[in-house]
Amino acid sequence: MEIPETIDAGPITLQRWTVDRADDLDQAINESLPELMPFMPWATADHDLEATTSYLVQSNSEWDNGENFNYAMLTPQGDVAGSCGLMSRQGPEVFEIGYWVRSAHAGKGYATAAALALTEAGLRQPGIERVEIHLDVDNPASGRVAAKAFFHEEGPIQVERKAPSDSGTHLVWARRRWLM
Image (tube, one colour):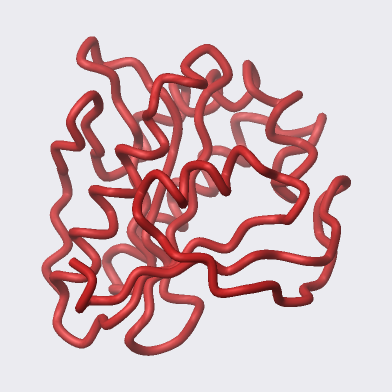
């Protein structure tokens, strides 16, 4: 796969995460923990720089193996506005998009810009026919992002509850290659 390491996403730039940005990512996570903790299983009160660095090391390994492609969302000034990625966990022919926005940058359209850019990059890859966003039914903000990025709601699925506010019911939103 030829996933670009840098993507112009309009108001932000998506740039492949590297370990040298661990301090920037850790600061963004710590500032955003109250908003992340309800729905992100990894966002806990004891999250620290070591966990962030471990994530970035794993992220780079997964990128190099063609499994998952994680990006920093950067403002024009180079500040970390959040994180996003294309994940292969839904099986062949499918990428799943994940995203979160740093609290100080919420409401600026950055998650939508990232979802649009990642969808385009994902559907350009050979063999990828579909891009999905999975979100908790109790997280309407993520649903608004999916709708604004021209995804279509396909319906609910039952999942294992992993985060404190996880309802166990997620909505699957999708875009297919023929809708590009």
